[in-house]
Image 1 (tube, rainbow, N blue to C red):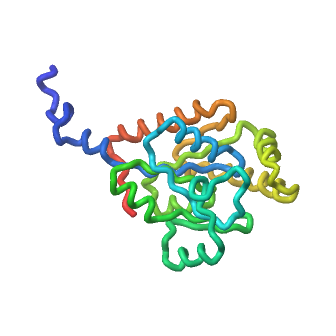
Image 2 (image 1 turned 180 degrees about the vertical axis):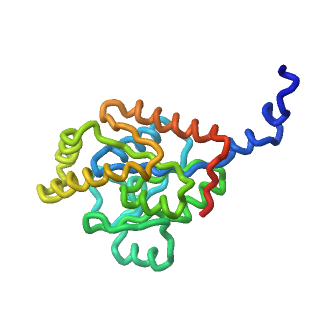
Image 3 (image 1 turned 90 degrees about the horizontal axis):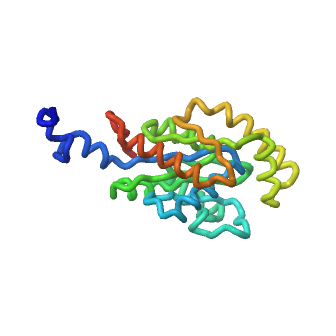
Length: 216
């Protein structure tokens, strides 16, 4: 039987080899406080070979954050200049601050054959879905509303008004699940499990018969 397998199955220039070489754009989203930054930080710490896009924002930097690492912290004037030059894949105003995903950074990584991970809020994911529906969309869910509230309170950076707003928004964002391909429950004490699930999704996507092709 083995003699009858097509040559491409064993390392020729067939479809299987080409499929494995298609870089993916993975969009990671979820409500504020669900742990997107913690998951990506753990992935970096484990040395996972992805390009992690750094979002630009006009939001004030928190004490634990690094400019250029967690976000590109920009003035409103700097952000507007990039906006005028159409340098963002998508951008939005969230809780009074501007957020944008640099387009050139994604294009450069994909051109090198590197899988790209973008972290955005649910509004941003919805926008990217319309522009690049062939991307892989993953929604991080909190174990419960109570757990999400505790995480936001522990940040010590949210006023009571902002906290209530974020919790109400989280309920609305959960209704956006149909635009996503996958949903993962994000447990703070099980970050490795979350990372492994994301990797399993990427592995499965690499095995698709009809590969996703990202064209910016």
